[in-house]
Image 1: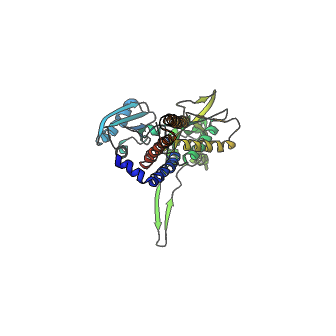
Image 2: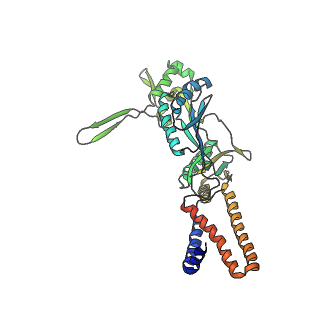
Image 3: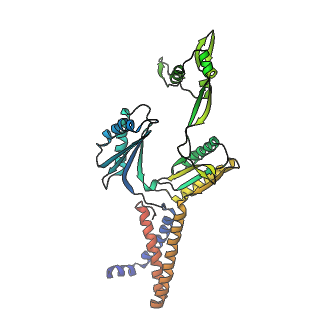
Length: 383
């Protein structure tokens, strides 16, 4: 210890320059280090979610859960697997051993899910693999509400989603209260009876004319031309102009026997603010992104689009986690300043002003050195 103290006295300029470097570099690190609410904790749980509209719980267990469990049970490091089957939905929860490699486990699950997809019914939606990570919880909720049409409200929310997800610090924005659009076909039975058209003919007509056909390509030596068969329905006019049958030298089209209305699927939940229908966007930030800067960018992006909205539409920001981080950082700074002042007062009374200044510089120097080390090691500031 004496040798270290002696070295410091003999190289006072070097020590002062090192201290100055720590102050400058530490201050820069304190400003730039990512600030989060929760640390990136790897919870050893992964969910696999599957949806199949209209399927019964029994069939969901037999057709969805069992094929998925058959593939997933061979994953290395798996501790426990549990499943839930319900009406139109099934899920498999995988719990891994402590100390697992989260990225490797996630890759293994996705690989097995891709293999199991071949055994699922054709109408089953794409299975979704979800990693449980507290750092991926929403950090801000944007709510849109007002007495406007639902379609316009959803369109605005989707536009905001596109703009927000383009920000570098945003991982994704989930829309709540959004309903999947659909086309409602209302058939006139009298017209169908007049032309002797069966319902099965209409179903097969739409199905057969809404298929993507890979027609191949033609290579004549001078060039290669890809052949495209226009078999995909892109708008309402494509459906209405479909020919159903030829009778008495005239073509009966789909639009003559049915009308098509734009609508939405039945709602599974509702969001209301102040008694008005609302749509919410839950913003999730990327791991390691600065929560304060990310939320400020999201707010600025949303408010920049507000000028194009109807006057009746209002926007609110809820569950803003950056407020808690700002309070925590403010308390931290106040505690450091209070510690410096109290220590200086005590040291001045006991040892004099010179020792008080040295000790007073050591406190912020130690703090900034710790912040600099955290940034070098790749950590973030969190609770």
